[in-house]
Image (cartoon, rainbow, N blue to C red; front, top):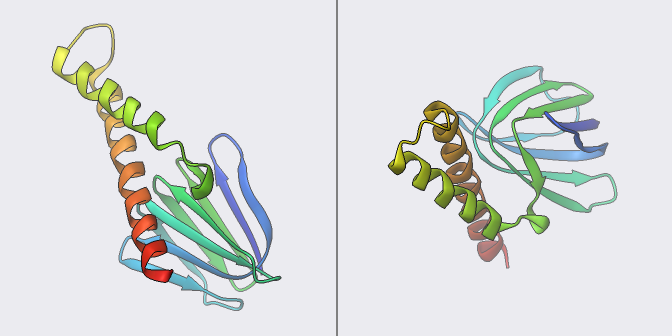
Length: 139
């Protein structure tokens, strides 16, 4: 089946796959070819894609939606990046900046925007931690 993972900025992954595992709102979803049609929300976490050659790719996402058709999986996410390329220090800095901005309550930034940035950073860090735990248990 074909899988497309798309963020607001770019196509993160597109290719033929034999399995997709995604963090659904009601729990982890395992999707194989000819899966029944499905549309649901995704929580922040890791999406694992197993391509037709057996190579596994992991992407950390900040939430989104997934549409499953028998031969096509489309994942629309707020943010996504390969787990191996994740810049934890940059996310920790963004989290600290947002927390500082909320404490200062400055008028130069919209509080709702800062809260959204803080939530995004926290979601990414939680997704990274869940991915690390899975990798430690696997190895």
